[in-house]
Length: 260
Ligand SMILES: C[S@@+](CC[C@H](N)C(=O)[O-])C[C@H]1O[C@@H](n2cnc3c(N)ncnc32)[C@H](O)[C@@H]1O
Image (cartoon, rainbow, N blue to C red; front, side, top):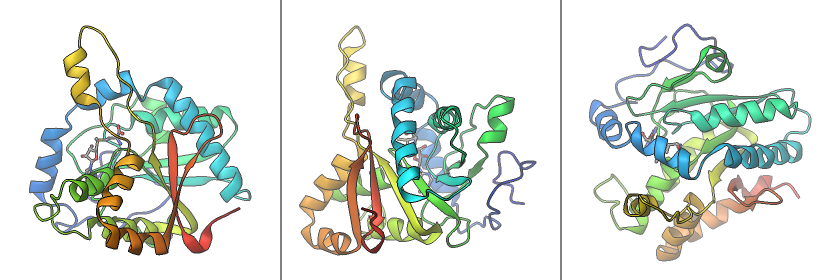
């Protein structure tokens, strides 16, 4: 098994292939490791993605599973940009309380160790990976959960005309192709759609800097600015918000697979 595994002793529900040098360049690991070390995650979990958010997310995922995979005994979810995987652990617990059997495999490109306690380690394996080149066979997962992760980054580059620096204008297309490659035929990509709220108080300025759009709104803005790309994606995918009471998540599905 690859040295990229944080928990090499773990038996994964989906066996990955060996991760190679091509999958993970040191410069990419360093880029993200510097940017996302601890503080960003702690702060955004405190402010926005707290237990209440996790409960609402678990409910939305529960409804999605009911609708999309009513026959499945266990739903396997890949979270390829999980950082310390706190939300994945919280959502798994909430789903279990509802009697839903769902298993996350969490990963991230950054040099970050998830802070699991013993029983959480069992529930959520973690590995180092690159979302653009996932070390899994085709059709390995039911859901890909990408919260403020690689879709967000690709949309950000597109919206801010930074795609030349970051590789190519086709990043978003490449990324979705890769996500749908590892998804089963009825598989769904789940992204966040909650706008960060403004929280007044002593740390006003610091907090303000953390305000940013959701992945869904950034994606819409990026596509509005790039109508040719939007046309390509619109032909292929349906994007909609999910969850009955609180629209905090959204789904991206292949058009041919939309469930009514
Ligand atoms: C803004 S953080 C969000 C982390 C977590 N999903 C959350 O919502 O708290 C973005 C994360 O995406 C990771 N990331 C960015 N590009 C990636 C890629 N190509 N492959 C894997 N992880 C990536 C970063 O390392 C970082 O941990």
